[in-house]
Length: 97
Image 1 (cartoon, helix red, strand yellow):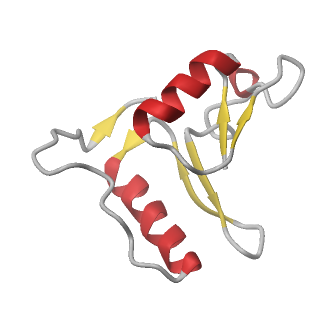
Image 2 (image 1 turned 120 degrees about the vertical axis):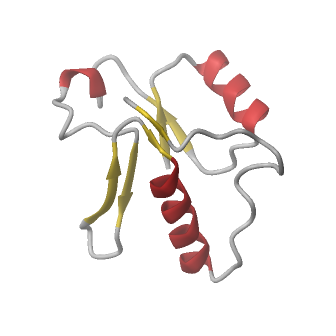
């Protein structure tokens, strides 16, 4: 599940452009408010395991962690993981959050 801090229109445009199909919630100014949390509490990617433990917490962009989360989602769904990136696409390994 994703949480977007953008408004509804920008979020819908992003989801469509990048083909995002997982459920995405809109942040509420009085809700999650990621900006008010410390870096340790707020991540761009959080994968919560079946027992409620945080399995992956990634701040910024770490390609290997995104690929790991993608692989784990596919395992949970008992389907082979689909490619995340297109052939020849230049995707950085790391970008600070």
